[in-house]
Image 1 (tube, rainbow, N blue to C red):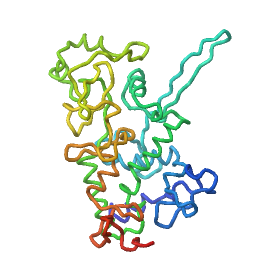
Image 2: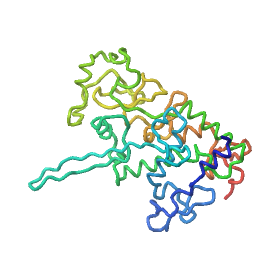
Image 3: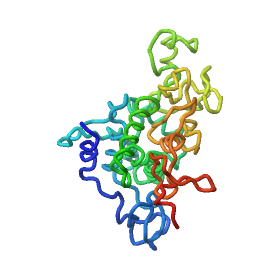
Image 4: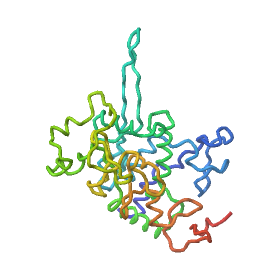
Length: 333
């Protein structure tokens, strides 16, 4: 498939995202997001696109599907029926139902998480969520869910991996971007794996015995039946790669396959080395021994236009006295 055909297929059904969405900053002053022709901002209130109501679940899942497709993490996506090969994110949602005991008939309290780490028992997934700050837990309808959505837009902008979402790329620029995206999908893109210390990666006997415990002892130190951590006082010899503190042997940690399974992170330490934000949906870019979000990896590798926020794939661009880069036709008031 040639480049032009591929871009045409990716462009099918793609319209400006968020048009008409309320501004979360202006709150009533802006009548709804009206996109600028090339700036990622509203022409009415001048606030950014991510300051307006985030996109829908469907749009987010399509964007993540495009990012993870053609990578070693394509198993986290599935083909769209009638989508001519396009893939969408198989986002793992988690629903927890707890009985509420009262004098009358019992009722149930249901909590829904918009996203949860895949491949876990519900008990371990709950433990992972309990270790996150309350305001960053992606519980449906809460500030935590809104935070996740805004981070998807901020950390993984669709125009960093989909040429069809960029503003007027030349054929040469589109080709350069396609090669750039293919390269980072194969070499640096990853999705973190949540597990108990010592239980991720290759299941060889040496890894199982690394902390000096037998398989039976490891089983006994796993979360209790009600899914609570207790005081997490049991420490192992595993240390977090970021803070250096010991990890609780009965608490979840995060592994990054590309960093090697000798490294692990506390859930709150699995963050971008540049912006310090938690890596949304555990998507990371591993480069020069550090974890980065997609935005900060890409702009380490390519200049980013200060006007349209897109990566620059031409050598003919404007560099301001302040060191900021601009597409030449975006270097304006």
